[in-house]
Image: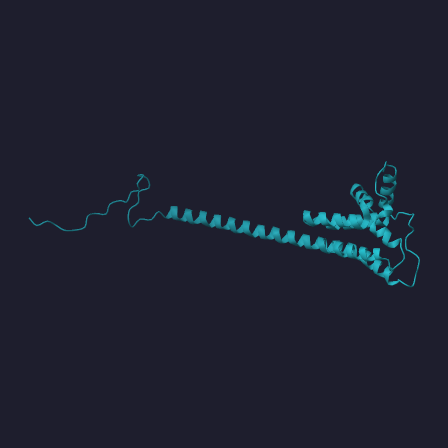
Length: 207
């Protein structure tokens, strides 16, 4: 008898593990919807993390830029004061500071500059601290570290200086030996004032 030629009935497709049987023409919509939902949630989480990282980086960059500008603003009065002093070269022969007296204003300036540099990166803060030591000397910088409050009227500086004076400072640097003090303890036009101008320019740039 002639054999019949025809299509065999559709057989279920079975995975190699024998689990998860599905027939052609049948879709498990619940599984599909669940998978799409998981993918959407994962995508949303990834996007949120990416946006958060960008926001954090932007905020950090803005704080650093604000700190850099704050340092420049804290140094600006010192630069203007030096400019006015050196402008009088040839017109005055007396110095601005008494070489025998320490000036507590130096402590206030150091406190203001180091406070402004707080949000700078660590490596740039170290540059600012090193530059402050060149300008103001170790005495005032150490005092600003131990007593980081000058007060609006300088009362904090006076208290800090009195407390510091009661300690044993054998071998400590003389507060009158700083570059800033020497620049104003000599008449206008002295080379030490040019050195101070360069150091203040670098300090204003947080370098």
